[in-house]
Length: 246
Figure 1: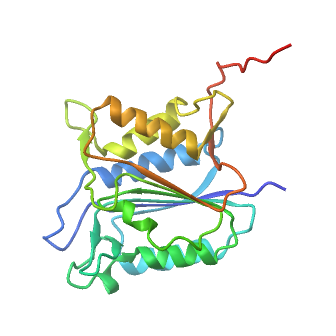
Figure 2 (figure 1 turned 180 degrees about the vertical axis):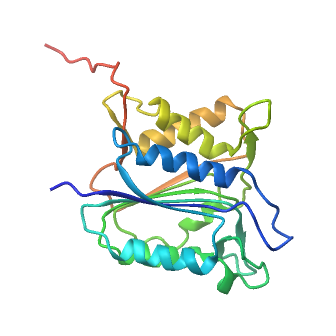
């Protein structure tokens, strides 16, 4: 029996700590991604979305989300906002009430997210991170099982926002903008078989960022103990036919 598709989407762009610059992109990116994932023709996900929420509410939701999954479920974790490192180089995902002086008690620890994902029964785990230093999440993931991690940047790079239009009505993360367009349009379905896999999506994002000449960002992908690629969504693109020999 096929499992469910379930996602937790987190976007934080408003911060109490003045040392964290407010961002316009994360909230809009979270809502746009949620809309696609909830599309019952393509994404087919049940989605829990958190926009500009507190660290306590988000941490509790993350632990509950991964604890109540079945083995065949496909679970997707998305975060957009400020990624912050502490003095020891540990990565944290910022929330609205994050204090850069007290990251362990006011932010989402990357190590905490890794732990609850490791303990989850699901063996089809997708992690999408659009934040500075997101590539450093891969540290210590050798024990992970059935997980693909795609990040907007390396462990030492920043991530960027861009304007979607000249009227400044929509700002978005460069990484997320490319990702969502590939999903919505079906362009990320590189072999046009009606399914978009994580490997296809990653290769599509790389191509789009190179096309935009965003060489200062280097998306990364890690795959851990997979029996095969993970399908992230269905696609409406089916114009490519594989040629076979008679």
